[in-house]
Image (cartoon, rainbow over all chains, first blue to last red):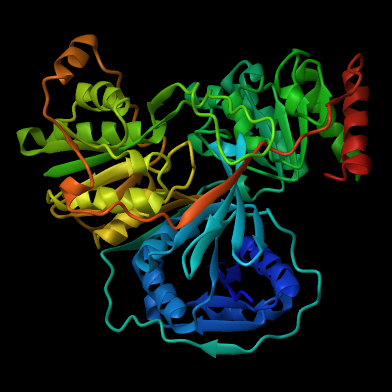
Length: 321
Length: 260
């Protein structure tokens, strides 16, 4: 009967979506196998009260000034102290910038199995974790062989808890930091000037490629993305051409995304791009060339001039409401 | 200043994975192998630091890999400005998990007192993004991951790290492990004369036994490789009239795919 601990990452006083998604998936698993789900909250206790409703059986919280600003070493030590005290079988960490920063460090400290970017979670006497490798060209099922394992969970891989969980008791734990000073820490956080939706967290993504012909036409993508409440992505070709910053790049050397809807505009579908987006639930391709490889990866396609289709699609989506 | 750059040879991003059905092995025979693209930013950053500091700086490229990895060390590291190379050649570490890799690299790095350890933010084959932070823990030093800008001071560093919707500025003491992201710099290409000369630079090949290390035990095991879930054939929307096509697409996305 596995006990699964879940790190509840918070940002601006609220838990990240992925924290509740993985709490829910852990609950669905232990409802089959037995065992419990333990939410672990560091710093701001705001999220602790909510954890039960998202499927946690118990909540463990550690507060204090040490958590006022993030650093990998403090998070590593606090969670290692939690693992030593409570001995969960698995610790889930969101595959966010912060989670990816400290989870491997924590695994090294625990000398534990570490599996990144999981999209599937199962247990048959031991954990079986499913994850994409080669940016999604292939999936690996991973068995772990250590008393505790650390697993990163990709945002949007799992649905939220629908079971109407009860309030869970909150217990304090000692993070064992007594006077610890990290070698490095975040001293400042800079938010992009434009309020943009982050690609890896977006439910809808509209991406543009070479078919846009010139940098100025990327605004077509941004306009459609704004209409759809979507994040704006890009192919490697137009990032390398300097039309848009690298933070927009989707693909094997950019971001790997799996939104509910991915709209590829003027993107031919190079293998390294397909790798980064082919796990999207629904894919739409708009491209002049009916033989473009992107159509092989898509669910819906329009083989026509994007300069005519994209404004028309923008208008058609507005007209739906 | 002593800089170590940890690099990995990986299948290039155009590689197709041929896997008809789930199975315990992956056919890696046809792969074209290159320097991991993110490691190229680490190599370039090291060389730029050396260009600023002059002779007071030495760059060591470190890898774990079989004989074919020598080409990557020579062409992509030594020929662009690294001073020496260390390769751990240990057949048991072929396809090692990140924790095994980090333990072996840490053993190599403990033999020199490096001020700065640079590596890519992740390797594009297993996509784990684990080795950098693991190294920092094993060496008990600072870390900054997914870095797009790096500044060095006297015994300290300031790094700009890419995070959701912006950047985090991380400041800390050296030594530090920095994992490099696209945008940090533009890697240079090696010139032919420099590739020829690279062979003259010192290269050391070690085994775990040479490092006084037992081959680390794997904590994870890939039991099955499987192809991505199959996708139904693309439904093409008639495109004679773009406006009508767009309306039909919007309707399909709402009513059929329930995606908007």
